[in-house]
Length: 433
Image 1 (cartoon, helix red, strand yellow):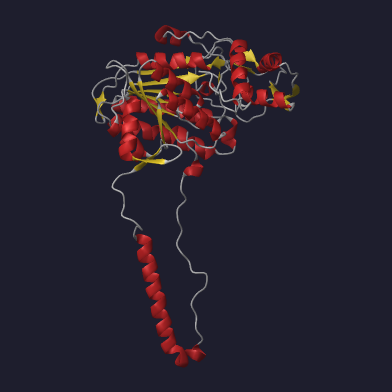
Image 2 (image 1 turned 120 degrees about the horizontal axis):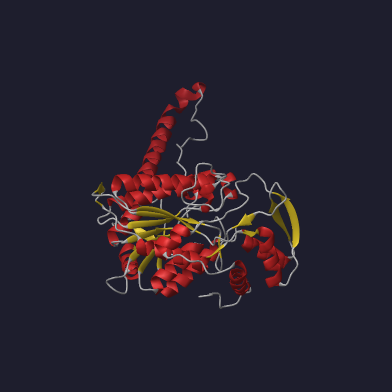
C-alpha cells in the first residue's frame, strides 16, 4: 500500500541570499582585505562541500531493512525473514504477501501460516487510514510467527533483496491504493501503487529462478458502468467509473502481458465489497457503525430511480477461502531468468457473495445489532466513482476453486460489531482470532 507522499522531492540548487558586492570607491583601500576575505570564504565553502560529499561515518556495507518500529541490520533481518518464510513441511508453500498489514492481507497471512505455509509480509504502513489499526494487525501477525518487512513495492532494490533471500513459490499481491472516492483527491497515488508498483513486482518476479506463481487482488470495480447482472468474468470491463477501477483494469492487462511474454502464472481475483473484523475504516459498514454509535447523521445514497444503492457484501472469511483456493490451484510459472519456456496459466475470478443487499438494509441490520436508531440523510448518488450496484456471478470460482461463500450479511455484521466494540473500548483482548 504505497503513497506519493513517501517519494522524496528532488533537491534544488543552493542559491546565496545576497550577492557579494563592494563599492568601487573603496576598492583601492580595501583590495587587500577583499583578497583575504575572498580567500577565507572560498576556503570555508570548499570545506563545507567536502563535508557535504563525504559521509560522517564509514558507510555500512549492508543495507538496512525496516521492521516497523526500528531498523534491524540485514544480517538479523535475514534470520527473521527466513524463519517466517519457512514452511512447516517440505510440501508447504513459501509465500510473499504484499499489503500484509492490510485488512485482507492480515487475514490471508494468518490463514496461510496456521495451515503450515511459510509467510513473509511486506507493507509500507501508509497513512491512507489510521496506521494504528495496521500496527495492531502487525502485532497479531507477529504473535503467529509472521514477520513483516516495512517497505514499498516500488522499491525494486528491496524486492530484489527479499527474492535473493527467499525462494518464493507464490506471491499473494494484496498491496494497493484502495478506495474509489479518494482518487479524486490524490490520483497519483493510484498510478504509483496499483500500476507502477505492480509492474515493479512483476519485473522482479519474472527474473527470479524459479519464477513464483502470482495471485493478486483486482476488483469488482472493473465492471464499472456495465448494466448486465450478475457480473461475469466474460463481461465487458472497458467502462470504468473511477480512476481506481481504471488502474485495476490496467493491472489485468499488465498481468496478461507478463504472462504472455515471460511465462508468469498469474491469477487475478475480483473482490466484491469485503467486510468483517479488522476491516478498513473508509468502508461504509465501518464508519456507519462509528457514526451511529456517536449519534451522528449518516449519509445514504440512492439511485436516480429513488432506489437504494446495493452491494454484494462478502465476508472476509469467505474471501480468504477464495484466496487460498486460488493459490492452491495455481500452476507453476513456465519462465526462467526472465525467459518464457512455455504457455503459462492466466486466470481471473469473481469472489463475491452473489447476494446483493441494499445499503438501506445494511443500515437496518446495524441498527438492530447496535440497538440504536440511525439518523439518516438520503441523497442522490454523486458522480464520484461509485456505482449503483454490484452482483457477482461466482460459477467459475465455485467450479475451479471450490469457492462457496457461507456467511450472510447479518451474521457477518454481528461478528464485525463484536470486534469493533472490543477493539475501540480499550479492552486488552482485541483479537477475534
